[in-house]
Each structure stands twice: as structure tokens, then as C-alpha cells.
Length: 258
Image (tube, helix red, strand yellow):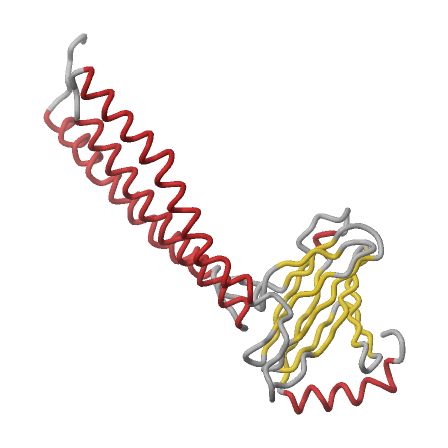
């Protein structure tokens, strides 16, 4: 019948449903959040750093994530407050609008840019091949040569060449010289550092260092053709003595290619 609002049982059921449904939705967020946090680890995670360069990147990420959460919370709170305000005089509404334009359109972006410079610039220094301090072990040079669709890792001091496999000594800086034989590639080991393009006809250098033994995954981070997704490498960090012993056994066996 028109205007019929249902029995008391119907109204009670709808009210209970309206109370239970938000709880179900909130409860569903818990396992989803746990699943997202589990993705922060693994052999190709930028949030599970194994070296100083990757640790600097992860620190910047966490600061950015925290700032984004604060800004989002503030925007939601301001929006809710604005929804409650009605009937402001025209002059007051114009003054309020100008304040929001200046604060949200000028001051807030400037603060965000300055914060990114303060935290991002020092992080970038970890990627540069700075001269070593007196008494420090000399950096190991590795040439990372990209081609469609594999990586050739060359140790010029020993003549050893590997394909899709990079071995590093723990605690010793490594200067990676990137090159390309065809198109643009990008050298990236997320757990050890940032990305560096491999350009045809040019050589770019970045610094990596592993702080602990382990195995990680490197990936080409620049789309380079149909086989791009499979252009990966295994990265092994070894204790210095074990690395030296391995390198000595590879010299006569490897020759110029693997």
C-alpha cells in the first residue's frame, strides 16, 4: 500500500542491517591491510632495504607516506567542517575563499616541495660514486650491459662475465656502469638501490652496496619490448672471502662468456 512503512520487525531488521554492514566492511579492511603489509617484504621490495642506498629511499618513502596520511586526514576533517557551515555572508565567504586559495594553492605546495628537497637530496647522494675515504676498500666495478632481453654483467678487473646474475661482496661499495646494446633499459635492484637508465652510446654510473648476505631480484624498469617482463637478474651478496674465492674460480672457467 502507498505510504506503508512496514512492520516493526521490518524496521528493526533494516536498522540492524544498517549497523552490521559498516562493521562487516571495517572488519574486511583488517585482512586486506595485513595482505598489503606482507607485500612490503621479499626479494624485490623497496621497503625491505639491504643497503644504505635502498635504506635512504625507504626512509623518504615512509616520510612521504606519513605526510600523505596527515594531509588526507586534514582534508577530510576540513571538508566535514565545511559541510556544516551554511549561510555565511558574502564578504566572509570571499575572505574565507581567498585564505583557502593562498593556503592550499601556494603555502601547502611550497612546504611540500621544500620537505621533498630536504629529505630527497641527501638520499640521492647515496647513489653517486663518491671517492672513497682513506683506508676504505676500493669500489668494485661492474659493467651492466642491457640488451633485448637480458643483462650481461662484466667484471673488467678479472674478465669474468655473467648473464642475468650479479654477485657482490658484502660491505664493499660497487660502482655499476650501465650501458645498452640496443634500446633504453633501466638497471634496478629495489632492495639495494634506485634505478639507473642504460642508454645506447652512453655510460652512466651508480653506487650500490649490500650490508648483509642474501639473494635479491633485479629488474629492467624501462619498457623495452615484448620480452621486457622477463628481463630480470639474480643478485647474490656474499661474504668478502667467499666472493674472492668464487671470483678466483670463475676466471679460468668463464673466459669471455658464460
